[in-house]
Length: 66
Image (cartoon, rainbow, N blue to C red; front, side, top):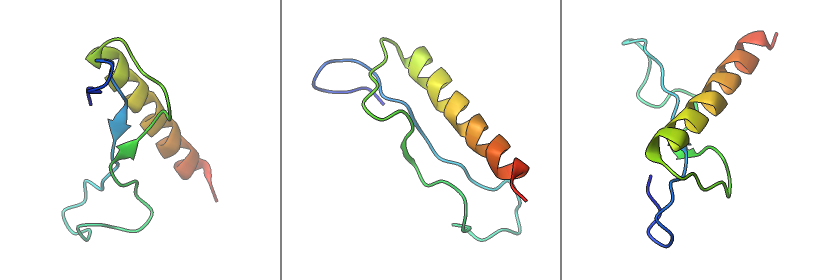
């Protein structure tokens, strides 16, 4: 998402289930939110890459939990 005040970019993402049988807002998945608090990126591509890194780290850690 581009920031109005300085023209930089913020990293936002949401994690949703790909299961068609899952409810619309399943518990345990991440709602749309800023992924890197207070980080401002110079480009949209850099913000997207950061959002993907954080989202993937959350998925990996959730799958590693017993």
